[in-house]
Image (tube, rainbow, N blue to C red):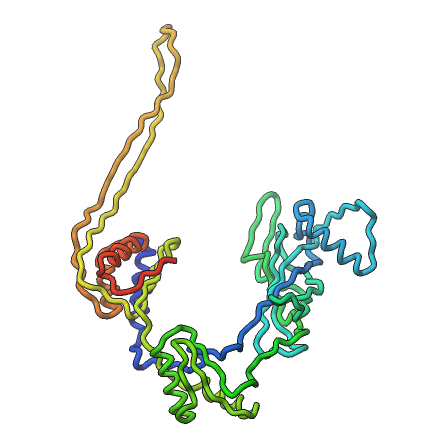
Length: 371
């Protein structure tokens, strides 16, 4: 049994031991739903990082870096001679991204992420020059500037190099300032919609019941499996207090559908508590094919006039481990399912093929999703 297989088995048993029953699991409404319209807004901008220690873009391969510097210098009143070739080693072209939180006000600082788009070796020690951050509508909502912090280090000498973490991406804490606000409709109308993070009619009804029980009958009305309309007070201060109380109400979500997530690239298999097996039989055996090639030299006898030749002898060996038919009993709990699958003795990659076959045979009572 490989170490990866042992690790996955231990991880599955750990999850099985930590899982509790759905009846005892209660969550706050703010954890299963969000208020419609209260969301982050993504901002993006193109900027220049200066002050690098010779680790910037190679300008012959990234002409946009030179063009950006010429445009920036021109706006600052510096005119370069026509045909001037710049060799910049301390400058890097970057993309600046940020999330604008809901209810952000003018002057509020937010964090930004700096990512190199050229061939800069490192952004460590650089300074981002003032960069406008725009939204999807093309309007500027924030301005970013500051010293880039890179959580890594690198060194190179005599043809050898060593790198710790990622050097072409950095962050600036409070590196951008909000310049334009995004209006919200929270204070308009007499109802506010709560949207479930996962569409489920049963959970939506439980959210409605919890709100009506705490705030009075008729306060909440379900629209569909995702949205719940809630009547709110007209006064803004009462509305804020009301929403704060509603968000902290506890509700027990409905049990999620049985699902098995398979990552075909890494061999990871993750299943939730609702997964169950029907009784079935599985035969599994590993097929190993080995091909070897041996080279030999054919030497002709002396004075025969022949030529020395090289010949190749190929050998093929096929081995297959015993794949006895194994009976898997039906499992109603996650621990039973894990125990039944571990009895096969397959590695994680083989487990993917077995789960697919069990799903096609109707023995796996779960939705199989391959990512």
